[in-house]
Length: 105
Picture 1: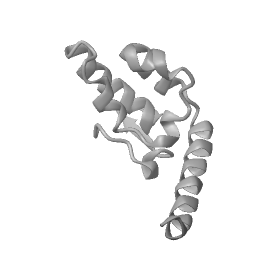
Picture 2: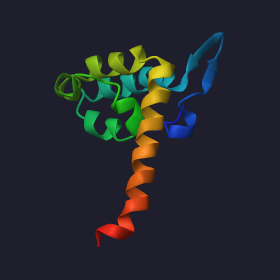
Picture 3: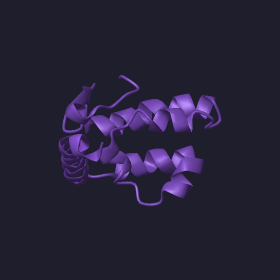
Picture 4: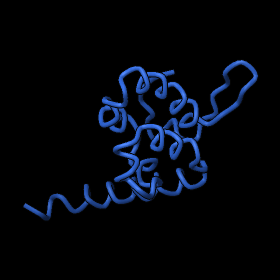
């Protein structure tokens, strides 16, 4: 499992043995061990490996930025429908910014 989840992987289901889970759930479990071994010190680096659509779904960012266990649990608890909705919104926002950038010079 890669330590980076991209927007195109958000809807994908990963099969591990007999388990079938969405990519962000498997990612959170894989990263848990890494963060635990490093006492949570890499949480800011790990958060950079998630798409904006997933990060937007996490409501209390102050707590989750300081407590890696709460952050990873919050990632695992996100429904894929919510992730897709937030990912589409982020993509639309980026598209709009790209379209308006020539006019902001």
